[in-house]
Image (cartoon, rainbow, N blue to C red):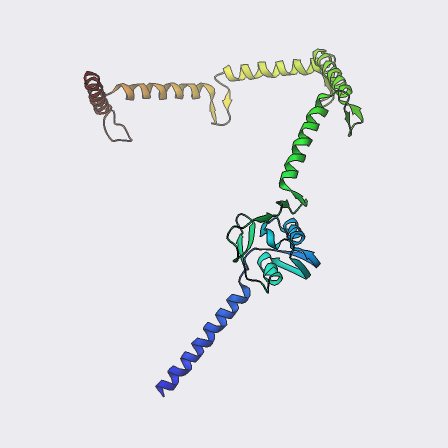
Length: 284
């Protein structure tokens, strides 16, 4: 009875492990997969053209032996794994496929040659469908074109329809007009609806009012709820208390629990020890 029970348990365990292995193999991420589907439609197309197409779609740099570049490829492939595509293409050949997802490279090689010569696809940027080097060249050219454009006063601004020279002249006029406006007390401030002279007079009055307020000991400090005179007296008391504390060698330092006199003794000892070491070093 016990043996029959153990046999059934072993069978159940074997079924569970088998299911787990099958499940894992079905859902394992294949090498060279970036989860984005790419397409290959070929009809007796040389392998060289096929790998350039895959590079363009995936951004991978693909290296293949020169002897394989003219290998004819036929079929329609819709994949998210570079390795799967080449396994299908070379299903009748003995090849090795080496993929680096970090470097985004794929190398295809056979086992029948020692001195191998490779064809390397161009490094494409999938989003723009161009080589990385070509993009750098274009960016440098655009940068130079913009520098030349911005230095030429006859260059046309496409937004306002004026040349850069005309825009500079308008900006200079606006700057001069603003200086004249700001220096004229009769100029009108459109935001508050008064002249600049009236605004200046108002600001001066406010400054005088604040000065009188801050110098009056009976004025109320609304943040503390005390009069300025009371705040000043309190500050003077605090300053005097701190002076007496710092001058008394029996005062206790709250951080170390030692008196200020003891702390001074320790500091003097450390200084003498430091000077003694330096003097000895100089003698040696």
